[in-house]
Length: 138
Image 1 (tube, rainbow, N blue to C red):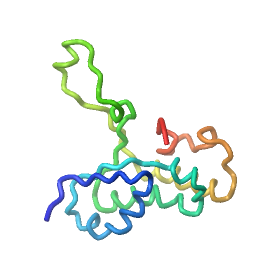
Image 2: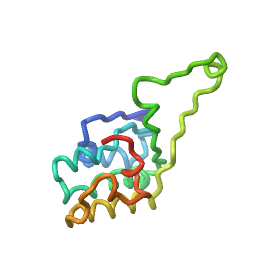
Image 3: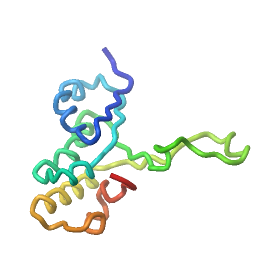
Image 4: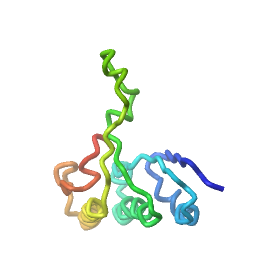
């Protein structure tokens, strides 16, 4: 059966869910996945050895032929504010930056530096091209 959208929100433990759902994702039957990318949860738990699972999860989506996009934070909290009648008539097209393998390579570099104790200040020490550095929270 085809899955139009799969939403998973398990407070940072999404990589474990998708390890279990790997056959479903790789089958191509899931058209869209909506998740919260939460490296901050793993940092607070000091799961340095497992930080690579976060970008690897997104790479698995890419391997299954999906595009990975980052929805700007302002579109994810408390609804979308529109103030003028002209804005209400305009089509709603939130910016969704495409996440690339190059971006995820920078996230893997962050994970390796965390694992080796070479990242002491977050967000200052994050690779500037990483998805993690683009997040406004977590």
